[in-house]
Length: 170
Image (cartoon, rainbow, N blue to C red; front, side):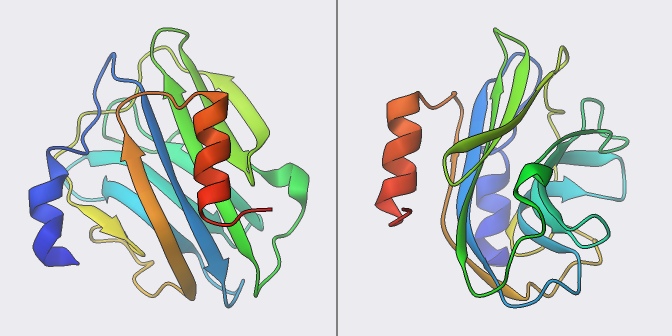
């Protein structure tokens, strides 16, 4: 995928005042390691943008982003579902509404957490990856990703349902 990553990087950048929706279906084969599903995030050179991941230390799905490129201090979690299970598809969707200044995270089209975000997502120069992030340690995804998508707008409730249902979510 790295051959296309550079071509997509600019189109998938965000920046102040840019709304977005970032989502995919994920299937975990293991819960033993940190796993990144989608990312435009480089840990060197302060080019951290956004990533969707499973964090093994806290056993949750989450969306992380940086407003200034230096750290992924902002996040929305899906801790309400408890520890995810293996051998099951999950639909993950992160949205950022620049006008409302709200970041939201959905699992299987169910809202998990919404938090205020006044600055937005940093306009980084990192490449876009599926299954890893640039110079990160999460290079081996123990699972699968399908129907990965990025929009530079917030999906409506009907569009979220269509995205979820189109991947055969229940």
